Length: 428
Image 1 (cartoon, rainbow, N blue to C red):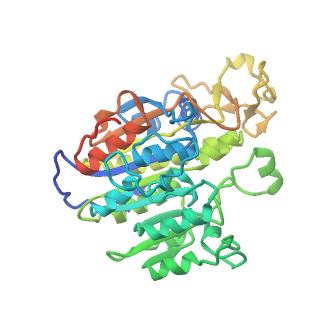
Image 2: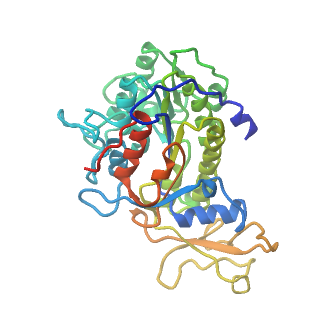
Image 3: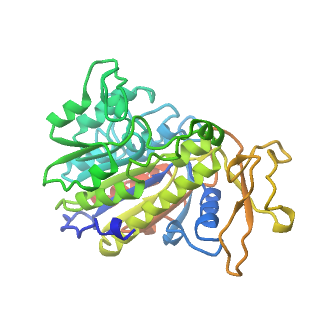
């Protein structure tokens, strides 16, 4: 962690507005819920310990409903966060020529910040086409238009673009650093990015060794698709693949590097960073993968907490848009759960149960509590889709006091906009 924090530098002065303005860091650990954070706490710091997530002072219950659905989709939720308008379930931004965000600007939040002279960037542990970050810079007719989405990111000119998905930056069959391209339009986005002034990096070591010159833009392509393998435990064991590719930078490393670069900008910055593994592993009902993704997400939160200690003019905002997999946690008395025997494959309602190595494996064991006891727990799954309920918003820093009670997806846009531009937008 010390190495990560050492990447951060002091910010320069920000411009004044109608109200105090500053920087925004929106962390989106996708698919996370209160139950998943509790399990992460038990496993990594113990029941009486505190994650970085636990230590953020402002908290609210999140409502992620969309215009045509009571449960969110990743793309619909991200569109609402990025535009401040309650999107429909299929939306990936707004492609209509007359489309306007809640502020009146004809584009999403990061594009408006960029037009106002802020430095902007996205971090994504999944492929670059994932909506939780991409929708803040580009729009598409459909979520499945990966090639168009990745092209839109390059065309945005955002100075920091870090994620996976190299396959969608190269023509079909053209060899890349991580595998062959998949584009059917013949465009080589890596070559286009270089002509547009981007330095392109492909590994953790290349990113962490890079110290961009002023005005230099950086594109990170750290995997053929995602930087993780979001499959069920049984498929991962059969494949021999790891949860996360070791040559890719972690969520925390990408955030720390981005903060170091973006915070040099004299007019401030906005960063959107998504941990996608927490969603994909949950929708694959892989409890071990979910908990590793959460551990990494919490490490990223810790980096930004340290940044806030010397940059109080920054808003840290953390939210998901759904409870992926309807994950729940069970922790019965230790005398009822033999620690040397597998947990049942299903509960009494037929819901699948995961132990530490998947279905029918030994229970997870929490770190010691305040009395030195190590207690067992396991995870059960209600679905392989995104569901409502249990999503919590947390915040710290400038304007974080706006996060309390109940908030919804539009409120996240409003507090980010207030921080960047000093305007308190009315609800639509």
